[in-house]
Length: 247
Image 1: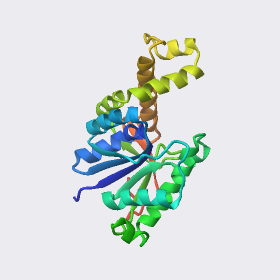
Image 2: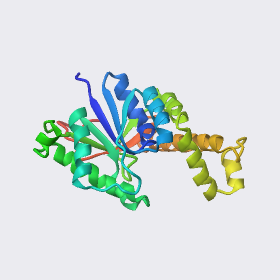
Image 3: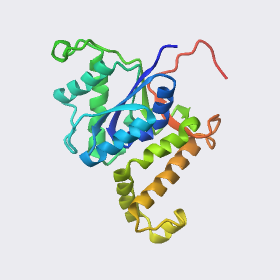
Image 4: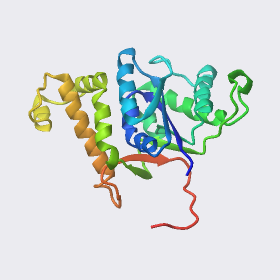
């Protein structure tokens, strides 16, 4: 079987770990897992690199600015250049349905940017300027979708994914600061017994562990008809083409 090249078009660095199970499994099987991150602050980049290295993922940062993401022609060319250079068989990116209701304006603009760049990457657009031939994308998967139609059993790499998350200390502290503003001290103590509420890193780490396990169990063991124990949910773009119905 030929090696599979998977490209994650990530809006934020955390997504490298959120899709880390599927990316790590592909790398373990001899495939290439590559992530291009649209937005990532300087202080977080070394941590994202460390997490990606654990998962077997090649990572690059595209240096877009927060609040300034737009599906303009120069931006499309930058994404097209990545696609044509990496030559992925599969692209993973954010879910169009989810990003519409997300309060972060960068997500909505990024989704248009990704999809139009994916379409243009396969055509004779800016071929001479970019110096790279067209590259069609046969398969797109949307991460953490509103309505998943498939899951990836990540049980074999669960511990690896958790170790990768541990590297993202900037993200963990940020999550703690946001969620501590939404949760009462009593709720925090009940949710995270034995964790010091004043320690943002410890709180963020424990909260992410709880949330990640809950999501993975919900789409795995607790999922109706799922055969996975711990799973990442995805929605594949377009219909599945089968030569027969399979059990």
